[in-house]
Image (cartoon, rainbow, N blue to C red; front, side):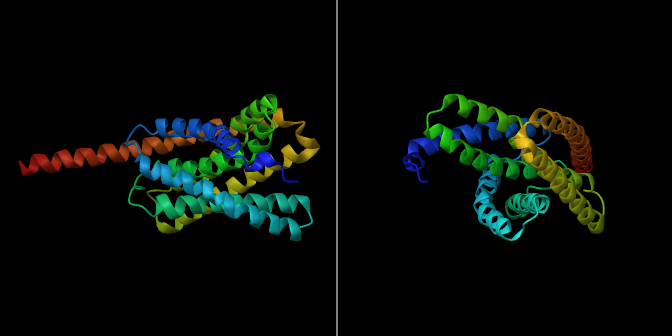
Length: 250
């Protein structure tokens, strides 16, 4: 099945806009929450785009897993592991490798940025068909559900890794590594549970699943605030040291 609208540039552009806007809204929210030292927009954009490109690697890997894993539960977990590792890798090769990740709050912000880039292209792929068929109702419904569910899921799950790394910012390397592993396990666990219940009964229980996701999101926001305050205290301490050094020099 190869409909002509899949090759229509305007269809793709409209789907890309519809798929990216929810991610950009969530990205704006998380960056706005980091009111201490705004991250450079160039690095944010590059991390976002790298997160989008990671979808290109996920698709063949997940098809390969589907061909070799028979058990549905194991397949769902394997898919979640694949997505979370590649989203985290997008953060790692761009933001983490830069000189700008230097405060606790930087970790969740850039992890979520990579995840939202991933969600943007994934959303686009889901929207291409209804947009090409000019089905406005399906397009709006798909966009809203992915804004409320999938886009938020991607940012929260990968955000767990960043939050755990941020909480362990002042600890030794062993604890920081262990915290990142715990964050990855939490991310895979939540992602797998969400996908399992969405796929069960053809998604008929999606309202209950979304409710649980929003509860987890609120918890993430509270933890994010704690990490943000850690950065705020660090920033304040640095400023005080600079003032003290200037006063001593004078």
